[in-house]
Image (cartoon, rainbow, N blue to C red):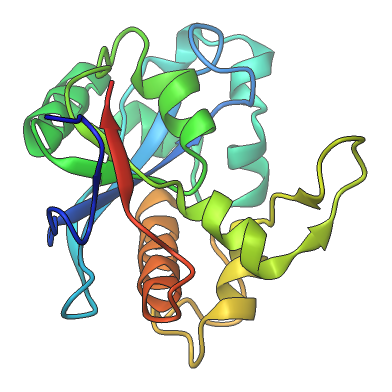
Length: 209
């Protein structure tokens, strides 16, 4: 049996969408996940359910300036105190692993959330779930923003741009401005996926890692 499936072959009506906020763009082990959010989507019903959201706790007194001055702390409501007072990172990671085990999972930018973080220490989630089509890649072909790079027709749209361009009436209840927190971003990505599925521009194709 092929490891690949489409909705026509096997409709996974529980698709989990995960989003992370991190201390930087380089990925593990240099950067750390400090916020995680998970939603559950039913494409057939067009519903989004909050499943989990948490800041990850670290001893920020031991951090260097690179981590303490991360973009996430300068541009959102997340603070170092929130990280210091949050549940221990490994406790949160184990909860996420339990939630996603054996599930169908996607993200807005799989290459970032999964390839740079969730597939590495201390998450170790490669093969833990089945990934399905990247929401960002589908949005790229809808938004069609010209690429500045040779050999690439379109560039990847930022989540807030794709969400505002493709969905109507702010179904995730974000308001005027994206807050760049993991759970709210997961909600945005989920409603974006639902709208593209309705528009037949998002197709579920998956392969086990």
